[in-house]
Length: 277
Length: 190
Ligand SMILES: [Zn+2]
Image (cartoon, rainbow over all chains, first blue to last red):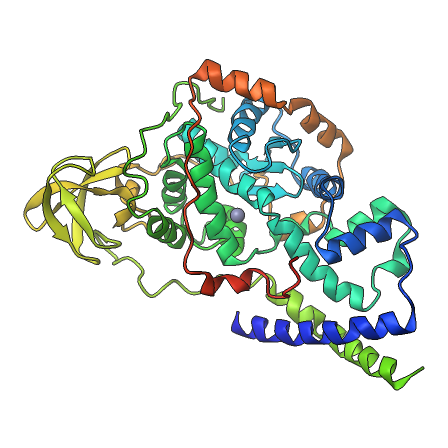
């Protein structure tokens, strides 16, 4: 990590040196194609909500290509009710939120920009009640709210743009969006900064509590996942992209301190919880 | 071509050589476990906390348990875990106890839910890095996903019917901001 950081600083300095030089040679002209606009918006960190959704939708469609939705309409509608309600407790209540349970025995959950949230059947099966579902969805909702994956994309694109790797190959807008996100849904397999994960845990816990749920749903899920052996293939991607459950729980406990003591008990919603057939 | 332009270009070329290195480091292997990993057996206090007579922050304090002290987990209720330690039985915050499995106090009272269940290996659909990289856009599934989405009013109706009462609660604070710049290693956030 330390090395990564030093390299980043070096790159940043070079980027700063490169930009004014380019401007001097070729005066800035308005981007001619919508695709270029999207790239420039991403690089400047000024992606509009519509552009964010466009990127997220592409990632979501690719992810569904890897694992389709579980063919259970009752399940999908149920998860959307809980997820949408939890998302209403955050700063982006009016995004067009989408929630889906995808058909994979892996134990994992994913978020894509613009309000796309997925949980695998393997993780859903290990949940005990609605408060736990709310906590898991809350963690992913927090990633969307804080635009964690957009920031990850931007970091990649700063590098790619330096070499003009993108502009030359672009055919149409959808192609450009695909170029932006890399191959398929590989962005979903990339690690965010560890602090972003701890932040998503802290926010996910609070979003579920705000929604009226027991605040200990997310910690309970982390404890449950901790029972799965580290060598179990079903958790290998989760453990590669996230800190280990024990570390996440430790950090949640430090952040919570005595702050949850005065919180009135919430619902666990176990009576409503939809169990997989 | 001015020198002014040529220099940054070669700089850019040098940078591109580093691209793979940086991208590879974007997905670092899992770091080794933190130094304060749980002891192999038994639960212990993750942090110092008061042992109380009941599962309530206002309950009488029986003792103060030090970080690392071994405890035996007996039960769990809401945000509290019942433990016995040094000859006394009482309650501590659930997030203050670490179970041997690496979880918090919840870990022991919440039994592994799939224990004994046979997991078929053949035909199980995993979702690893390779699957994700190779994934092809599925517009049909995306439209199905759209069909399940709810609007704000529908979600509020669900919450009302379920008796879920919204409440205000500020976000929990993270560690001191000195650790935060790692979130934005490029320094390009607006
Ligand atoms: Zn996460």
